Image (cartoon, rainbow, N blue to C red):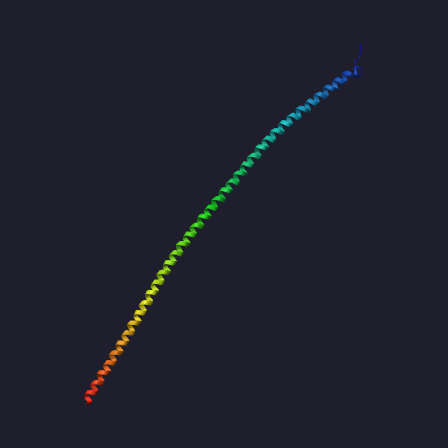
Length: 146
């Protein structure tokens, strides 16, 4: 019988076997890289979704901040106008009070003037009465002497 050893297999058959092994290895690597590629693309899709979610949240944060800023500005303007109106009302009240004060001072001055005039008139009357009395006394004295 013919003993078959590796040396007896024609080189072409070895070439074919090696080519098959290379093909299987290549297919394996191809499938591996395909799986890896699918996983990477799934990962990149997930990352893209995460990025879009973060951007949306950031946009919401910016929007909220803008709304808050607008609200604060509106509140500031409202407070400012309230303060302005309050200040105007106070100024008005003060000017009215000042006007009343000025009027009452003028009344007091005119009353004091009237009082001074009345006193002066009384003094004149008293002086006139004293003079008249002195005249009368002098006349009486002159009459009694004659």
